[in-house]
Image (cartoon, rainbow over all chains, first blue to last red; front, side, top):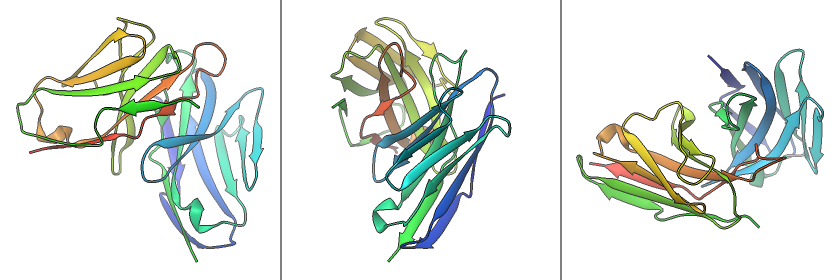
Length: 112
Length: 114
């Protein structure tokens, strides 16, 4: 059975800190890994990582896929209170019809 | 911008009622999905659809059915609502071809079954 595990489950940091969120997966026929940010309502897309694109960066956020370790990290530097959210990792398998298999998420709280 | 809308933000129903949750996307996406999100369990896939009149079971289809009569609309149906179906329901869509893993989510419907 495919599995996606995120750690930690929750995290509290001070503004300005750097955080690293982890996602490991056991998936048959891995195709891609996606990161989403969920605030009050709908998850919003952050990054997609595939075998041909293992590192992505956007502003203070960056993500790396480690195909050997079957894992990914999401880094947020110089955190702000607006980064407080649940961060979701999801994996797509080639035989899943592009359905996302989500981890349980990491709840990040950035305090002033 | 992709827009995915869901018919209700909050819904309260009684046990045994038939419940319809509607989802509409305006970007001509082929793929549409229904998830439920529960504390401690994350998002779990209920059903998805690749095309009109097509449907596939996800991880937890029991107690649910779906309808896709038009490309832009994907409905989730609770035939006889039960209290364990109290949850946040999220609809998503994704385009065909390259990038179809990237799903765009609606705002969610928080359903309470009494």
